[in-house]
Image 1 (tube, rainbow, N blue to C red):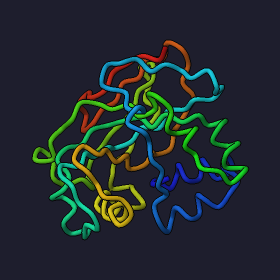
Image 2 (tube, rainbow, N blue to C red):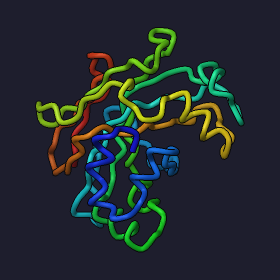
Image 3 (cartoon, rainbow, N blue to C red):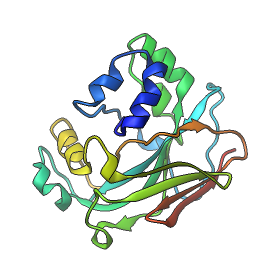
Length: 204
């Protein structure tokens, strides 16, 4: 919840104070490595959710290990970026949230972390001016620029590094803008970063 309009979208869904807390500090959750959906592979809808939603995000990749990284040094630890999708079993997330339980089952299932082709940050050093969008079946459903974030990319990485040692190859999804929606069988999802297609796959 790193974009104001999306935070508003979820206030009624989650029925708790998470959205309000997000304005003060990033809301962090983790995904297993088995959640990674590599470029071009199809996404298979889980059978335990009736409301699986797409959340397009700017994703950055950690280039080498670091812990307690000052924000001014964060760019030394990021080597690439792309567009990704944090697939969410929204109905399951609502149930877990209502009980005050973690979101792991709703967020970290197999294939839930779709990833596009990487762009090295040398090609675009200002991570607070990166545009991205997601098209579903040829229609743009999510579009944003990182300058609209509540918490900047460098702040997010610095913040997380206070709690977790960041390792080479770790991926950090930086939050989704408004426009999240349900995916269905045979949907065609295409993600763009700075106007260039970086992600293209189908839902099965």
